[in-house]
Every structure is written in structure tokens, then in C-alpha cells.
Image (tube, rainbow, N blue to C red; front, side, top):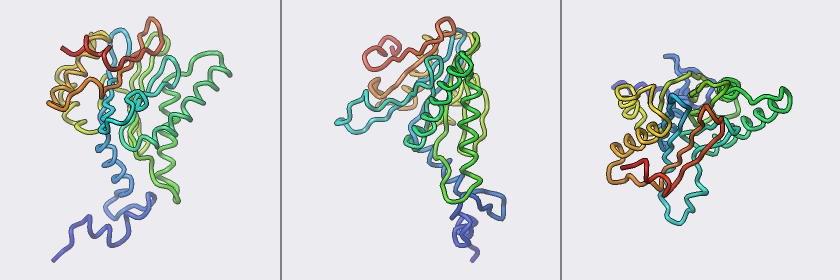
Length: 241
């Protein structure tokens, strides 16, 4: 009896290194990392008419954890935010590099860094770890949003190091189900406030009885101010009715 293809790959050792292609053209360690991303808690990013917004599920399961210590949205600079799905300790390393690059740009050029510069650096580092031996790929997808020169930007970088600009996107568990809703119901003319309500409604539909405002991290940046605003806990009640 013939072995399934996946078992053949494992038997031949094609999944032992991120740099080894299988006979059918796959980097199996990279594909395993993509599965890790889909196990991570979900986040939604939107480009709105007056700015950008990210709503992230912190998915805190232990009541002993202080909710404010489990932030899922990271500040790159005051005009730019990011979130991730997968192994968040991997994300923290990339965010640290992004924050340093943002400050170097400000000191060197005297202007805030553009989102494209940050996502390109993150994507380059991810790609590097699919090409050189001795290290595993970063097990995260990154959703980065920011405002620059009066324009809103939303980017997503996957495990392989590819990145694309989006009007709206989701990463993490249930990402395909969320994206189906985004494709049918997303409106480019919605405001940031409408965007927050829209994202929370999507999560409510998907999580059902497990929906709880305490588990969400929300942040936005408006074009007019280019400054990060965070919303958590009780402050989210007016957006979820």
C-alpha cells in the first residue's frame, strides 16, 4: 500500500529543515509555521474613510492573568500600530526591530517613518529565515496599519515573507470565515467608530457565547491626528450593542 504524500515527506526528511524543498516544491517547515498562525487568536484590520483600526482578540483563558498585561496590539510609532497571530514571542522580536527602525528614521530624516518601510523590513527578516539553515521560520503573520501624509495604509505579511496592501483583512483562527464577511459587508466609507462596531459584530457572530468585551484589544489612528488611541474593557461597551 502506498504511503500518503505527507508521510513520504516525513520519512525522507524533507520536513527537517526550512531550506529543503520537497519533490513537489514545498517548504514543509514553512507550511507547518502557517498552520501555527491559524491556531493563533484572530485580529481584524480596516482602512476607514478617516483612519485605520485594528480589533484583536487577546483570547485570555486564565482568569489569573491581568488583562492589561496581555496587549495584542503593538505601537510601532504614534502613527502606526501592528498585531500578529501565531507565536507572539516571535512577533515581539520583530516589533522591537520595527520600533528601532521607526526611531532611527525620525532621528535621521526628521519625519515619521512610512508604513511601507516597516512592513518591508519585517517581511525581509521573515524571508531570511526561510532561506538560511540553523533556524526555524518566524511562526507569525503580521497585520500592520498606519497613517502617513494623510493616507491610511494596511499591510499583511505572511510566514514566507510576502506582504500585500489591503483595504480590510484578518489573520489568525477563523480568518477565512472573517474574510468572507469582510468581502461582502466591508464599506470603504465607514468611519473608525463604525469600523470598530463592525469588527466587534463579526467577532460576536463567530464566537457566540464565548464573546466577551474583556478579551478584545482595540486601537485606531485617525488621519486628522496621526496619533494612536487605545480602547479596552468597559470603554468598548458603546461599540457593542
